[in-house]
Length: 327
Image 1: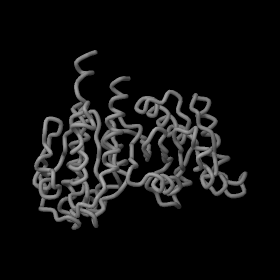
Image 2: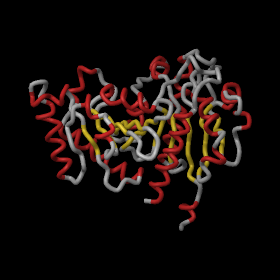
Image 3: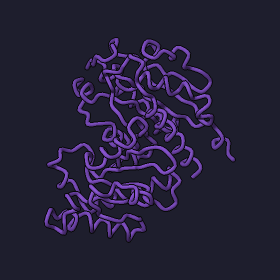
Image 4: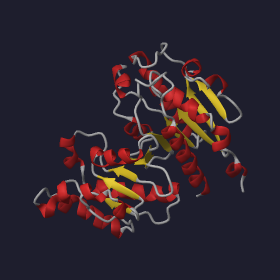
């Protein structure tokens, strides 16, 4: 074994929107670092004073496994109160994590939730973490996948992400769906240790188009894409009606479901896993996981926020980085 292979994994954690729950969730999760993740070391990116003020254990957070990398707030932050003056600070945390992952300093990054409106109000056009990661890493196509936990977790990936519903059909193409399936298949093999992933694919329309009577996307786009993907060796049956696909008898042999749009697959996933689910960006040259919830401004600073999703996101980041290193 090479020395680099035996070195601890290096994981960066952004603390996200300072008025939200991110800082306290990072601190709460990393309170378990010494026992839960013995093969990893962590760098927490955020304002040290904010962490000390917002998270009760933050003053004692730094140890042999956890380093706080101080990036200063633009203005003081109050729990639950958004301030556009800190929009660029939030983006700076993400940039620091991405830069560190690209140059090999970090094996993976875990992102706490941010508030898109704060960044936009600061004068920076921002659609979301997923799109920004793709832009910063010059990745032409990435895939958003949310997942539960456990021995055989429910995973749902998306063919389109943050689009108005009226734009979804036009955004679907044979080439796009094939590339999305290729990314899912590759990353489930490389980062999740699945030797032969099975990806169930939904249709777009009710009843998967009802043989064309309720829409032709299944016939003209999704079906041909699946034929091409299967010819490439990807196990991707479908398209299935989304309203009946999410049943145990269908999911028991599936490693992932590919849904056509955001609110087709994610309500089911979040109903089944909320508080323990995670968000993973597939297709990037770096590993990125995140929580499956937002900034929870109403819970910030109350001590009531549940760190379960953050813990699961760190679990997955460590596991994915281990698989990548072993590969």
